[in-house]
Every structure is written in structure tokens, then in C-alpha cells.
Length: 161
Image 1 (cartoon, rainbow, N blue to C red):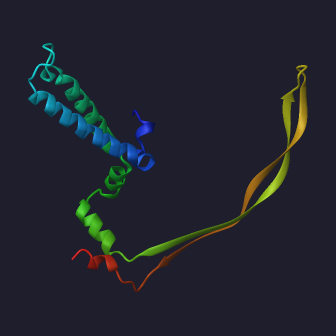
Image 2 (tube, helix red, strand yellow; image 1 turned 90 degrees about the vertical axis):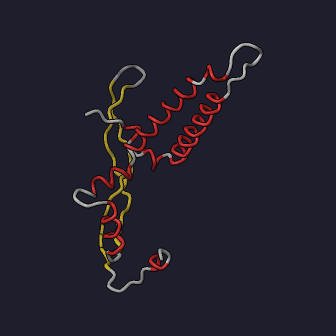
Image 3 (cartoon, helix red, strand yellow; image 1 turned 180 degrees about the horizontal axis):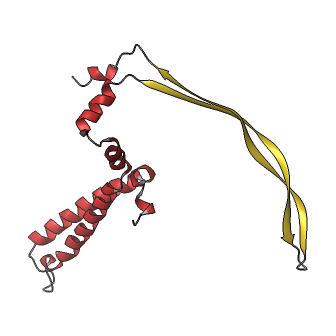
């Protein structure tokens, strides 16, 4: 299956690009409507109605690119993988009704200085070895813990009413 790497996390990596794409699409649509409705000739040469196909093709290209962006969006991927047998509404209400949890991840680490022998070729073309020092991160301890709240007050429900 063909996979487009540039489109995987478009919304996360470049939300301004998504907004700009929507703005350009709307602008090109407006220019298309203006060109289609204007039949005056300028300098006796050509009218804007004759150029209506150029912004229309641009609009189609932007819109197709927008649909591709929507297809590869991480939000759509998440909702699709999370929702096999239930609807979006059921999923959102299930998330709202669930008790909150807090996941804490902690890791302690330090750097260790190590040496290794590295082969290189000098200016005369001879192979030589030298000792190289480098620092390596060593994790000494890592812990994961999930805190589940038994008593909580959802203040956002007051805003939905």
C-alpha cells in the first residue's frame, strides 16, 4: 500500500498550513464567482469571463488537496481506530462520563563516559585506530503509576447547559 509520509500528521505539524489552505480555497472560489459574473471587456481585448476556468481549476486543485489533508488527518485516524462499533456521539459521551485518571511517568538517569576504538584512514591512506570518548545516557530507574480519582466534580458540564 502506498503511504504518504508528508501527510501523516499535517494538522499537528502545520496547523497554519491547514488554515491557509482553507483561506486560499475560499479566495479562489470568490475569484471564480467574480470572473463568471463579470462580462465587461477591458481595452477591447478580453473579458474576465474568458478566464473563469483558471480560478475554477485552482479551486478544484485546492479542494482536492484539502480532501487529501482531511483523509490523512490524525484526528480522523484516531476516531476511526477508536470507533469500530460505536458512533462518535457514543464515544464522546463515554469519555465525558469516565472518571479522570492521571498517569505519572518518572525516570532517573545519568550520563556515563565510555571509550571505544574507532578505525580511520589518515592523510597517507593508512588505516589507524584511535580511542574515542563518548557519553551515553543510562536509565537507572523508571516508574509508571496511574492515579484514579474516586471523587471528582466535572465543572465543564455546567457550561454545556
